[in-house]
Structures are given as C-alpha cells and as structure tokens.
Length: 274
Ligand code: AMP
Ligand code: MN
Ligand code: MN
Ligand code: MN
Image 1 (cartoon, rainbow, N blue to C red):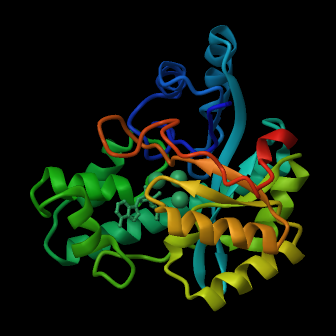
Image 2: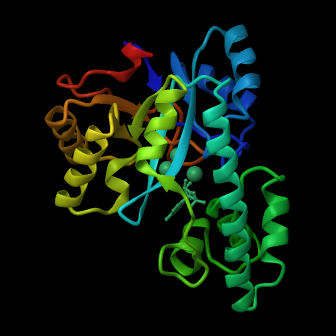
C-alpha cells in the first residue's frame, strides 16, 4: 500500500529541518507521496522538488494557509498548486506582512510582561523566515520563561493568554478561490483541532463545500480511532475527498513523517486526484 503524508513543515516556516532534509527523511521513512506544506509560504518547494526528483519521491507542492472563518482561524492546506501563480504569491505576500505585524504585536505583549527583546530574539530564531507562535514558544522555553514548548502556549501564546495576538488573515472564501486559481485542491487541516462543537464543525463543512472546498484531513497524528471514524463520516456526509497528514515539524517527537494509519475504506483518497 502507498505510504502517503500530505502535511509537513520545514525551516521555511516552523519546522526544524530544511526542505531538503524533510524530503530526505520522508524517503528514509519509506514515504511514497509527500506534500511539503509550510505555513503561508511556498519558498521551500523548488529546492525540495530537485532533491525529490533525484531520490524518486513523488512530491506534491503544498501550502498551509491561515484564514478566518466566523472569527476563528482555520488552516486550509492547498495541494497540487502551481508555483508560478501570481494570485497565490500575492496572497502569500499579504499574509506574510500580516504575520510580521502580528509577530511584533506578540513581542509588545510579552515586553509588557517584562520579557525583554522578545520580538528581536524570536525573529533571529526564525532566521528571517516566517515567524509563527512556535518560534515564540521556543524562545520562551529556551529563556526559561516557560517549562516547555507546550507550556509557552499554555502560559503566554494560546488564545486568550497575555501574549496572544490575533492574525489578520484572508477569508475562507478568498483562500479557497486562490488555491483553485493556482490549480490546487483545498483541504481543511486537522478539523478536530479547532475545538469546535459538532454543530459548528458541520457549519464549517457546509460553508466550505458551498465555496467549492475539496477535502478534509481524515487521518492526522494524534487522532484516535474514534476521531478518525468521526472525520470519515463527516467526509462521506459532505462528499469530500480525504487526506492524510502527519503535520510533521521536527524529528524526535511523537509526530513522524509517514507514521499514520491508513484511510478508512469508505474514504476517497485525495492523492488519486493530484
Ligand atoms: P501561528 O500560525 O503563528 O499561530 O502558529 C501556529 C503553530 O504553532 C501551529 O502550526 C503549531 O505548529 C504550533 N502550535 C499552536 N498551538 C500549539 C500548542 N498548543 N502546542 C504546541 N504547538 C502549538
Ligand atoms: Mn506549525
Ligand atoms: Mn495547522
Ligand atoms: Mn501544519
């Protein structure tokens, strides 16, 4: 059976491996089809494609876009997008500016708590790439402001916590449209991670379907069999295509490339359309 992983991150956003190393590791882990899906950037893909080709790995051009739906931040994965799409690049440029603005705001929030140079140091940690809350979490942990990476979110960075700042993202509609204009398929990432009620998640699926959304991630790291069953039912109910994604960020953790259970039989695999 094909080993598929359509959700992964590199140093272009908040992963710890370079795009090249992500591809190499996927090959090591016997992944047959990989999508590199950095947050709001496609910059890692050209180099990733060169190495993927030389190693015989099927690499899908992907991106994980932050957007807003009913005041909630939702992550939509675009799969099979063109790297030449001006519409996509314009959208990503705008999101990257919004991220910069938000990162500065988080920095100011942390300064108010007496945490010095938070923005400057976190920016350096991010190597001038996309700054995410993961970078702040790392900065806070490394400087003993929190007990762990996770604790940084609990104490400072999670929604409603004193360091948190809302991002000014595009709408779900603009996001789906842009992915389609770039020739890709739009997938709701980790649907159970938004902590929505069942009713609200159904509303999201209804709206996403009406906008032409293509699929949802049914198999995720951390999804227990009950969640997977729930998501496969949702997938069938809305006639979505089904995706599998580890959301790999770094080696050594519990989340690993390609280490995922198969899709339930009832699901239509999205990779057959890519
Ligand atoms: P951002 O897109 O800047 O809001 O950062 C979100 C990223 O932070 C996610 O993609 C995860 O990698 C990470 N993240 C968010 N919440 C948590 C959490 N509670 N624990 C660990 N990592 C998290
Ligand atoms: Mn992330
Ligand atoms: Mn995500
Ligand atoms: Mn992700």
